[in-house]
Length: 143
Length: 102
Image (cartoon, rainbow over all chains, first blue to last red; front, side):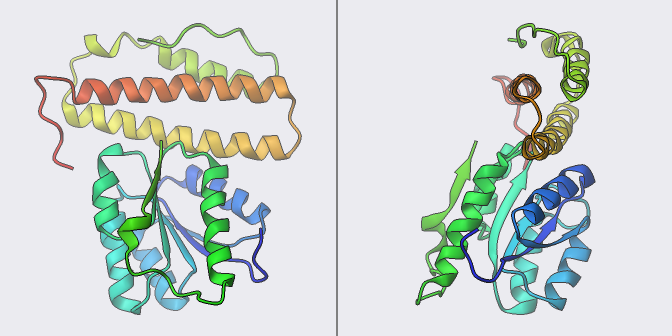
């Protein structure tokens, strides 16, 4: 990890095994993580403390990841780096339109997720740490 | 095309991965199963969810210094199961079928 302050990450996935194992990996890498299993818990966690990064599943009951991202932005007035990790390849375009910065189809290579986090940490450390407005231009996807 | 055969692994984590991949690969060819599109999409999604946890666990055991043999065997299982998920998804959107509305 390159940042002085560890990135804070909010991780939401209704598939607990996937969420817990990714949580363990990110903690081992030195990131500060919070893991939740429902979109409503993610919403509450984001309002309580805005994370630097949201890693979200997309196909979840009650509220999908795209809607969750938009609600977080509406409620908090801020947007973290948003990473979609989903089992549905059909969601790629929808995620881009919802403002996600990265799209990973499960099973995602953890190294690729970490690379996206490190790139973001470097951006935050740079003097102009504002997030670019043209988000769609930097939408990246894997698999 | 279904994945090719694996050499039987010897380490416990690799054997677990091998067991599950063999069980899944012994399911009759997807083409022969009469399933609704939603069921197929859901099946691929569930498979990908399980694979995500498996890929994360692989990274964790790699960090714990597991043997190269175990790691390679699990990597191979992940690859095979990912191909299976892709095959299910292709079947779901093959010509003559209407893609799911999401």
